[in-house]
Length: 114
Image (tube, rainbow, N blue to C red; front, side):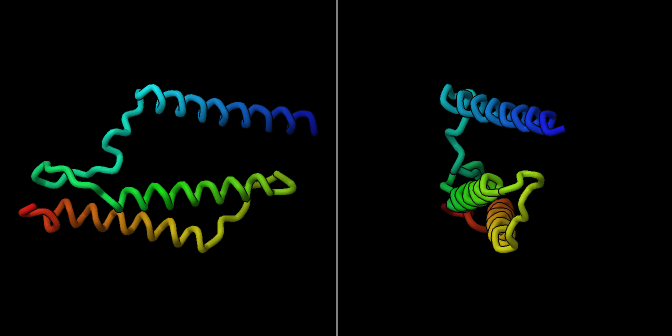
């Protein structure tokens, strides 16, 4: 049974490493387009820099990194660690800010005569 758990752990590790390499290679070769990652479009199709997208990306990456650290420091490795309520509130608030700004922009309230 211990051998089976070790094999499963290595399989999952190899799978996630493969996903990471695949995404990294596609990002570096330009197959995944990130040219307009931080730019949004108004209703009139004009582009604008979106600080909401930047904060959403940074908070999401910080939360993912915190969860990864919790997983790596999990001494037993039997189950996923509990996610702190603080991180859930921060992540939810970040998404709320992004969605509110997106809705505001889609209603064309923020960019009528820019």
